[in-house]
Length: 166
Image 1 (cartoon, helix red, strand yellow):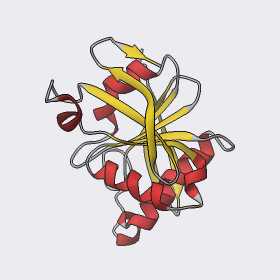
Image 2 (cartoon, one colour; image 1 turned 120 degrees about the horizontal axis):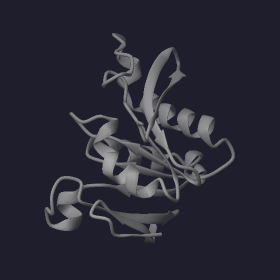
Image 3 (cartoon, helix red, strand yellow; image 1 turned 90 degrees about the horizontal axis):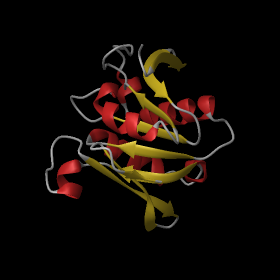
């Protein structure tokens, strides 16, 4: 039995794949390059007990469409894709946005939009090598909540080694 649901959403004619598990507040993961949604397997597994965890494959990656037009790969479209997914899954709720590598830059761009900032609880730059002293690939994820303008505070922490706190 697969512990993640494999689903699709369409945004501006581009079909995007995502993995989904759990129930509760939404935590959305966006991968870096050259990774894809499954890169967050361990984090999703750890957090799915308390959250609705979703990891999207960006355009051109894994099972998502690979459009020839560059528009789908440009920052405004990528930010709108995240917004569409979050609004589709949890229309009236805020969410946490976890980004690794390029996904972190994309999450930061999402956080810069004053209209969209009211939609999410936390922008989470996720780089295990910086935050954990290289314990192993994707070893630990620290999460901060963002009050705008930027005032960060601890939100939750999850370890892929079985330790977590919410």
